[in-house]
Image 1 (cartoon, one colour):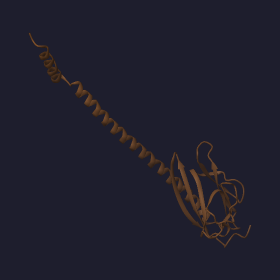
Image 2 (cartoon, one colour):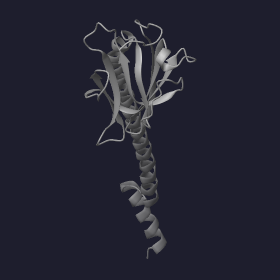
Image 3 (cartoon, helix red, strand yellow):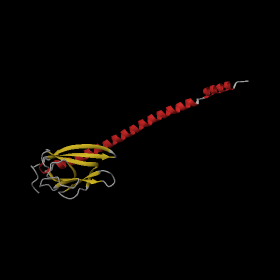
Image 4 (tube, one colour):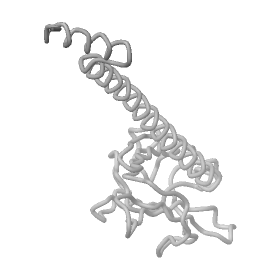
Length: 200
């Protein structure tokens, strides 16, 4: 008569020859689980990196377009004629750094377009502002110039002069795009600056 222990050992040997033991299967599953976790982590990191790069590129393009659009208009101006902060208060006679709601640049008297309006308008669908542009010395801006703007901060050039007597202006745009923040800054001098705007 064959001993039952002999049968058990023979069966285990046969299982080993034919396939994996339960312990081997469990170890394999654990290793595959670790490997899959590492691959998914790496993929998630790459997706996040690509997403950030995409947002960064979009913001850089927005900043470049906005500053290119503003450059000629601001530089050909004689200076600021109106500056309004986010609380709708005039800051024209100050030299404070100002988070703007609206600013108007005045041109020479012989020009048909007497001024340029830049204004932030809250986007109705998203948590950012759109920069709009208009022509004139009063009224509202209506043409969209840029998006994804959290705020625009300005200061006079040089910083000790008031805006109504400034030779130029520094514009700093804070962008917010789907949780990603970035800042862009540029300085503009008024080519037609005349020591302060004293004409209508």
